[in-house]
Amino acid sequence: MSYETVAQPMMRRLWEKTRETISLHVHEGAFRICVAELPSTQPLSFKRGVGYREKLVRGASGRSILAWLNVSKQDLSAYGAENAAEAKRCTEQLKQIRLEGYATSRDELIEGAVAIAAPFFDSSGRVVGSLGLFGPSARLDEEVVQGYAALLREEAAQLSAALGFKNCQVPDDCARS
Image (cartoon, rainbow, N blue to C red; front, side, top):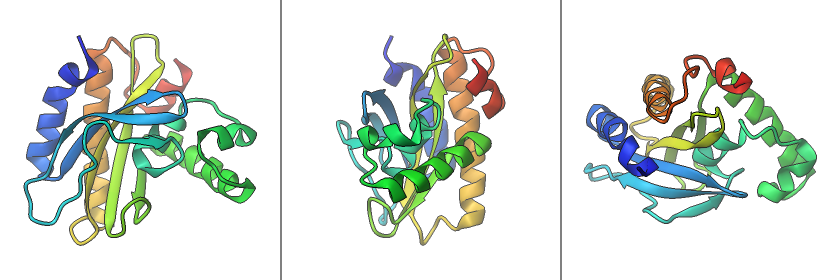
């Protein structure tokens, strides 16, 4: 069974609760690839589309995966960091993502867009990908982002459990597995 099939109920619940674009990304080398997307039906919305591919240091969907790969600051150039300053900034972001269990980005890949993403794990505890939400900053202020981040973490934990991962209730548990 594919990740897309297993993730459909979680993606559908998120889509119904938020009315924003929901996507599923899987880790592939230095990239993340969108393998499923439920686009928002609201007039002002963002989507990337199935097949969209981006380096892991770019955007919430990528960094939420990268945070669990145990990559050194020196190795971040292979994942898309363009210089030492970006690698340092990314290293700090990855620490925060591991602490909070999700990543965010504002105006990073698309001006006016906000993205939130949480990682999901397979039965061995390996990060497999991320569950993401995209919407316009006009609707996604910090309070809304916090609420949606909690929903994403819950659904990503459900997806991880459906894939056989047992211990993903708290981000630290995910890191130890």
